[in-house]
Length: 210
Image 1 (tube, rainbow, N blue to C red):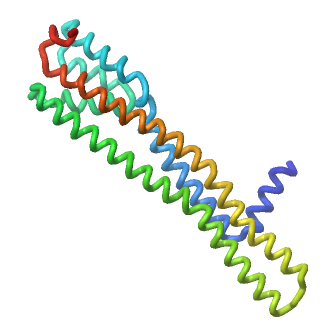
Image 2: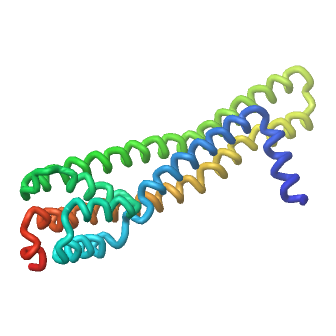
């Protein structure tokens, strides 16, 4: 109970900057969760997915049936392959072009999400520092009027709280962002590998086994 009371006191002593930091923290985690949802189930089992598609085609399933099967899968890669198979022109060059178009579009969208996340995470300590500077200005203004060193020490202590809160908010976001970027890099590598499997979809089903 004392632990939570300390946190509550810390937020209240930080003033209105604590509300701004809390809002910034919420927005940051909303974007982090959005990126996570986009990457969910997409950075692994891509080779397994391509083999499943190959076996479905070898079993005589049509590309439309494969599309319906992909619609039940989650993640970016099934979504991209579904877009590739949506065309009626199943020539190899057409499938490759649609695959590159879809993958570049999805990768660019995630890059934009990461740009927003980085801006939000880096803003937290800066906003905390701004709160500290504002608190220090008020403290020294009060010192010039009263000259009480006790009030000065209390004011400085409260002013530094915003910097502490900014760092506490930013650190989890930095680690979460680094984790998602590592997964995103693996996804990008898998997308480059998967294009060779996509090219086979333009062949006859008998050629897929080669």
